[in-house]
Length: 348
Image (cartoon, rainbow, N blue to C red; front, top):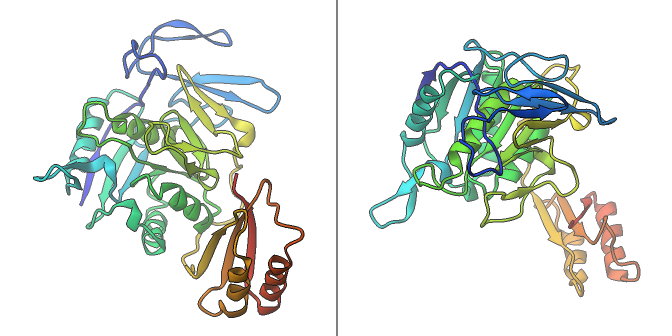
């Protein structure tokens, strides 16, 4: 089911200040002499690699990455399932409720009809799934939906569960080649229906950032950070700040203003937008630990093909492996000779 909602402006959240209203920022000295105005418009602060800042209101075009947002701007939300749209069932266990979150989004957009938000359309999938069940077949559906709607919308938000959100965001980062628009994955730790839920905040900011900023890549927004999709991992299952990007700084951080690290943003692509749907799940991921049974790795290298086409080795530090373990080195030689792809990565 698709529901159309018209709205004009974008959310403002005063992060880290519980006494502030969630929807307004108070007048103050601002950033770099730019006085903040009382009202629904937050400030975008774009900082380049030299430390110079450009400041402009959210939803207004700028010489940097700020884009003008009006009711003619369009955003597509792909709702796949997850905690955000769950409610307690008869036994008290959380379960997805078809139509519930779509209705809440519609009501939320009406509440913020005077803020710089786009027109929003929600596509709720027929079967709402837990993210533990999310896999390549679902990534293909999401990618195909983005492709079929690419020319009709200015940005995209994908709502799903948090457990495999980082995997999904990373996969889509590589599936969507020459992406020229912003795709943001988000969800929540607590359902929308709960009093202290983080769902409303994550949802509003994802909707706003996906259309107000020229960030042509797949991102993940959670709590107060916009992260690069393929550099993100879930690090805390008991905190609102559930995701981290340990080897890459956030693309944007939210506080009294929205601070953008423009030096870390990807440029607009020069090629035509393409979607890659041909994937294989015949991959084994192995995490190296002290006294790892390297004999098992040798057997995998010898007999893994054709059911296993690649091995991802999570190694120590920056990708260090044992130097004096003959079986480990033997396994690498056998894998190379047999055409088994081996990828070395860091556990950090």
